[in-house]
Image 1 (cartoon, helix red, strand yellow):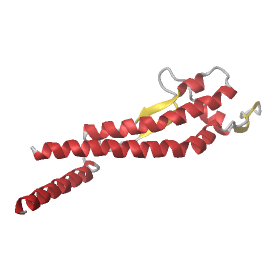
Image 2 (cartoon, rainbow, N blue to C red; image 1 turned 180 degrees about the horizontal axis):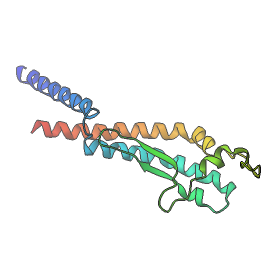
Image 3 (cartoon, one colour; image 1 turned 120 degrees about the horizontal axis):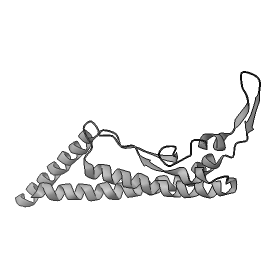
Image 4 (cartoon, helix red, strand yellow; image 1 turned 180 degrees about the vertical axis):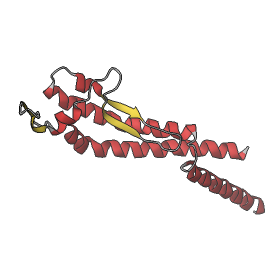
Length: 161
């Protein structure tokens, strides 16, 4: 009986140590395994949003540059784990006008008074986030919980050796 309670105490201590480690990870550099789990979760959550936005843009297809530019960009630093989903405007991507297609613009004129017109808003991004946002959020949460559980089991196994 005494041996069993010492095992429970040792395992509880290991769990406490692991909890402290994970808490400190937010203050220091993020462990590569945790970074991998979070980025995979973000990427998985981005898929339905990307698919929905591209599908809505098929109705508004001019050159297709905006639809091609919708994608996922991990923005992880050493201390922060985050990502971006949306129109990309760097490298080979030409999605710099995504905000105009989504929200539109008012009538614009130059200083000399020349009319530059207006652009009606299409709302492709707002509709996508409203419709696919909840689904992707729940997928991300579940995937992140599963991934962190695997990571914690791996760390427990390492601590037991």
